[in-house]
Image 1 (cartoon, rainbow over the protein chains, first blue to last red):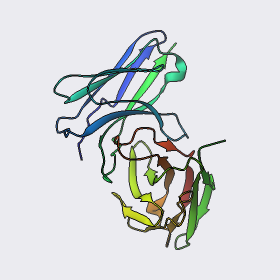
Image 2: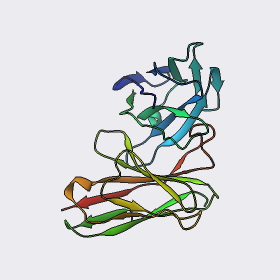
Image 3: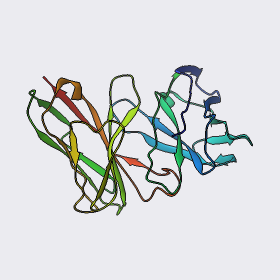
Image 4: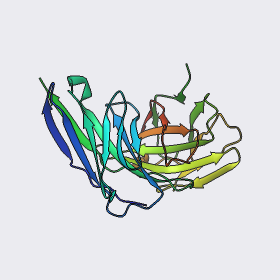
Length: 111
Length: 115
């Protein structure tokens, strides 16, 4: 299973763009990169997934360089409600092997 | 509402007691799994199932049993509760594993305390 490394915590202010980088040096060819968000006392919630280059949805963007050894989750114009833990996962497609959740990144948005 | 339903939300057990955590989904998802989350940590996989009648162990399976008799239900059984099993338990489901876990839907969790 590909191991991921993320910063333990980050602070930001309302209205700013936040970029959270995840390192996954031993990512496999078939692996996808997925990001989840978790609020206190709730289960994680799927944010975005990608394989290469850039993916954008209504919530976030995901940037993946050509070597795929890292990825960056970008949250535009964060608000206080974006304060949460963000997990980067690397998963193997077409297999029963499981995704591993690391400790995640605690994002705190300040007023 | 469609989603993953976990019951109970809270439970206190005495050491040595057994109990079953219930998980049900109404999205016709083939894949279901159980995770535990300890304070300040990420989620660790306990058991998972890729379809009715098929289960397998995850990272921390000791002390837990599962079965999958229907697509909808995936109960987690604690055989003899220990204080080390005090944790928050999450059930998750997904349509498939083909894209490495896209669209996992998580339940709201069961907070278990073993005294």
